[in-house]
Image (tube, rainbow, N blue to C red; front, side, top):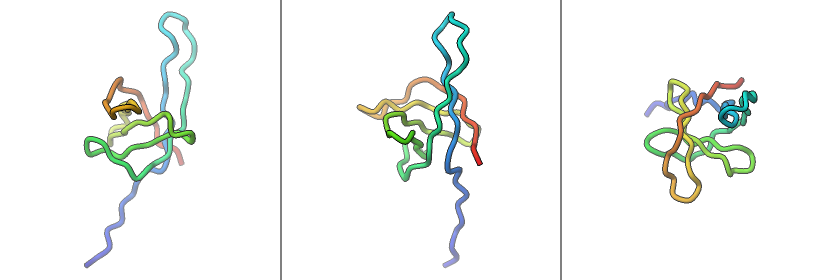
Amino acid sequence: MDAVEVNVVQRYAVSLPGPVGCHAPARVVIVHWTSGRADGCPVYANEEGDFRVTIDELGAAQLLEAADGAQAQCLHAVAMP
């Protein structure tokens, strides 16, 4: 059996919008690949593990709520070297 090489992006920068109406710049959170999966997509988390997202092949990040894994708002993610 041949080994299959999987090119997984190891980390992303995820942009979080500022509060509505305050014109603040977006906050950026760096997330790293984990071995977890949700809805068929890999799960990424910040160093503390309290900010978790799934990221699809188009760079759309879906926020995962820690308590039940339910997905919430869609965020923009950019692959990091």
